[in-house]
Every structure is written in structure tokens, then in C-alpha cells.
Length: 344
Ligand code: NAP
Image (cartoon, rainbow, N blue to C red; front, side):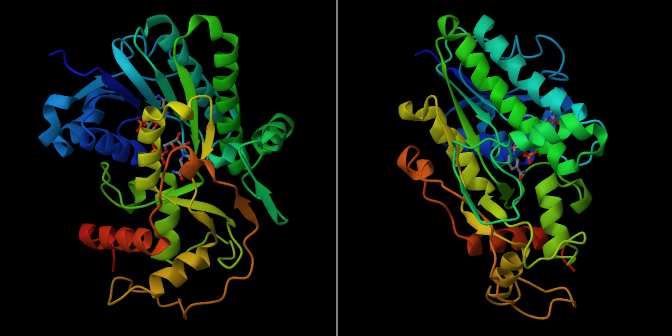
């Protein structure tokens, strides 16, 4: 019997993708995991040693280089493209926009020119490509685009906020993906799905040595919930966006690969609106000593304002997802910190 074709995943050493690789392997898939260099894949090989026959690590270098993914796409039947710079610390907006857009166009070109048996490509976009902040109560859906941040970066360049630079990179990368599919209809045999998550939180299984080497969203979480450091923001009103558990986002990517009706769809994957105080309140409600609050935490406080609501009906309707609770997410993050000795 012929071996099952591979699923290619990019950015495979990252926070989210390590969970995606885990989910794919658990579901019986063969995974080709792309990292910049082979040594960045060593940890993955060890983590998933029980699946060694189903996991291949490939080095693709810097994805902004032309043809970076040409070899990696050969023989794969599906692609999950997640690699993208994730930070709000950048000087020139192009530091984020260029790799995000080049990564997307590069993998789609490679898939068009060298992917002979690809059925579906799933790209990790973001709710930041829809909206990032709002001063007023809004409800948004997959019909909305965060073009405002793109314009802000064009106008203010280096002086645009870090969040604007990141949001512009995700907006432009996702637009580039849909434009590519539109322009290449006659030349491709696969379709595209984008997954648009808001802030992703959850326990980590990728290679992190200490809290400072966590990915961006997890560092924010650690500082807020363990160190009571909100970087000057008011935890009762900030960030007033939405959250989702990393394990549910991983499941969404895998379901998006497998679900025929997900083709051509942007899909928000969100567990609901939140502010930092919701995380603290939930942690305080956990049994026993799972949460050991920072001395400055005085007790639960009522949250009255959550400004952004994402309409996320497609995650259930198309992908059939049922999401974990905030309690489970907060509990598992805190247990992960304790296990790693990061929790005083
Ligand atoms: P992460 O842990 O920082 O992973 C990012 C991955 O992208 C890393 O493997 C990184 O490789 C790779 N990458 C970045 N620039 C690259 C380049 N020029 N060439 C090759 N590889 C490159 O981030 P994450 O939090 O898991 O996020 C993963 C995806 O989810 C991103 O697309 C992000 O925009 C999206 N997302 C994240 C959140 C969130 O809250 N975390 C929310 C919504 C959407 P190196 O390690 O070698 O740099």
C-alpha cells in the first residue's frame, strides 16, 4: 500500500504550530514540518519521537528568499502555512509586512508551480486582519478588514504603533493570499481557507527555556497573570478583544484541511471577548492553590466593558468545532507554569 501523502506545516517550531503538528500526528497524518534550519527542528523530533515514521523535518531557510518552499511542497496533499513574524516591536513597518506577505506569496507560488497533488491550503491569518482595537462597542465578522492599520502604516511609517505594524502585516498578507487565488484560478487545483484567531493562549509544548523566550501572546499572559504587569494598560478595560485556546486553534486548522465546505472561507475562531481582569477573576475562581496571586491582586473585580465582539458562527457551522472553556485554558496554563518551575 502506498504511504499517505504529507501535510506541510510552516513555522513548525512555533507556539501554535507545535500544537498543530501534535493534532495532525494524533489524527494519523504524515507531517512535513518546515523550520528555518534543521537544528530548530531537533526539539520537535524528540517531542514527537513516538511518531517518528510519520514526521519529516525540512529546513526552508528564510521564507522571504525566492523559491524557499519549492522543495517542501513536492508531494504534499495539504499545506498549513502559519510562519509569520509575531511581534509588536518593529521600527520600519516593512520589517513585519515584507516577511508576512513574501511568506504567503512565496508558498502559494511554490504550491502553484511545484505542488502536484495539493487539495487545500490553510493559512493562519488573524483577527488583527479584521480589527484590533476599538473605542466603541462593535460587532465584526469575516466581512470586515483592518485596512485602517494599513493606512496608518502608510501615513505614519516608523511612527505607527507596534500593534498597527503587526495588524497591517496580517491584513496585507491575507489580502495577498486571496488576490493570488483570484489571479491564478486557471492554474491551481487547490483552494484556500484562512483561519482568523484573536489572542491565542494556552499551555506550551514547543521549545521554550524560560518565560522570556515565550512567544508574544504567552509573554503578555505571563506578565499579566503572574507578575501583575499590564504594561500601563487598565486590566478592567484592556485589551477588550477576543481570546481562544491554542488547542482549539490547532484543531480548527486540521478541520479546515479536512472539511470540503471550508474551501474559500475566512473563518474566525474565537472563544469570546475578554479583558485582563477576566483572566485574573477566572484564575482566582480555580480550586486549591492552582493560582497563587501576585501580592498586588486584591480579589475579583466586576468587568463591565468588553468592546469588541466577533461573530464566530462559522467555526461551529463549517468546522463543527466545540471550544474549551476559559477555566480549562487558565488552569492548564497555570499548571504548565508550575510544572516548569516558573511560578513563585
Ligand atoms: P511564534 O511562536 O512566534 O511562531 C512564528 C513562526 O514563524 C516561527 O516558527 C518562526 O520561525 C516563523 N517565522 C517568522 N518569520 C520567518 C521567516 N522570515 N522565515 C521563516 N520562518 C519565519 O508565533 P505564534 O504565536 O505561534 O503565531 C503563529 C501564527 O499565528 C502567526 O501567523 C500569527 O500571526 C498567528 N496568530 C497568532 C496569535 C497569537 O496570539 N499568538 C493570534 C492570532 C494569529 P523562527 O522561530 O525561526 O523565527
